[in-house]
Image (cartoon, rainbow, N blue to C red):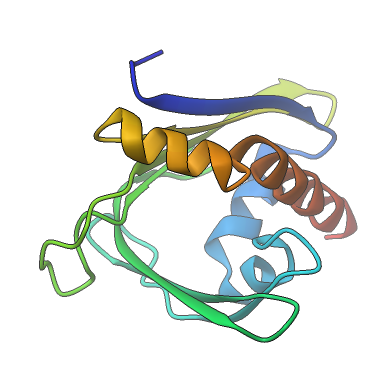
Length: 151
């Protein structure tokens, strides 16, 4: 674990390929990617390395929070890496993190899911912790698991 890293690791009761599909399909992503009662209002992704990662998260009160970045690496059913340090048109933005999601097929329809957020400094790591990284990312992983089981 790096100095400025936050992570969760869960065993999800769904196959890796279905979990990966929940990330790669914008219509599925909208259903689970925000911790309820928050929602994802829109997704505009170009799901490939170097492609755009863009979505708008909305609070229960309707306040909107746009998020934009790029995909750095994608290995189908295994790994997704994104960053918000660069906008989709390759301009620097206020870097917050690099996120790495991995799926390890454990057989019997189970997957070891690991989500890592790597921050540039202690300040942004602490900010992310205070925003509720662990409970929020755990909740969304469980929402993804539930959706994947229904596919």
